[in-house]
Length: 181
Image (cartoon, rainbow, N blue to C red; front, side, top):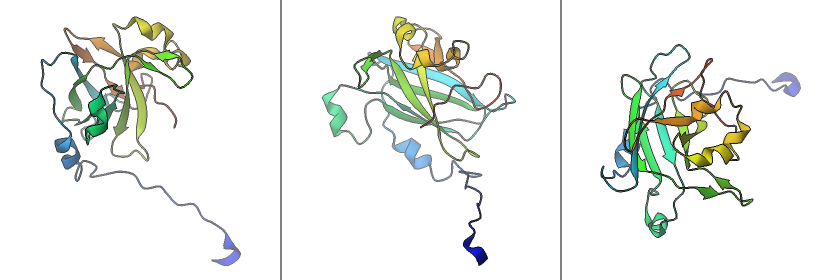
């Protein structure tokens, strides 16, 4: 190359066949029994900016746990992986998280870290899901950094006993809040 000039090139996206090859990751994620004390179900949809379903998204839900068994599991107790279906819908059964302490000592409201993988994304997206029935949301140091009019995109609505509804919107006026990493 003359002049040793560097030319930028496009990044690789994760599609168009994102879900192929990842089925084993979903199938190998441990299942937990419904009705186990402390478990909740989070249901929702992943939608694009036009409200169309994203049919091949993969979501990972992560929460901290103080259980000694955490160190012994291939998959942590507070971890679940789920794919969307043809309607962009997902449903995950997981142990309800507890409050956790930040490194600086401040307490966080119960929440889960959520990673979103989908066709067309150059990198996974990082979000959080909180629960509307938690009083601690009002003092959560991370949630308070989000503009008040956008916080609702991070809060799962109660849909009955131990069930919550939370949609992930990838772009547009109601876009879910995503965090930089």
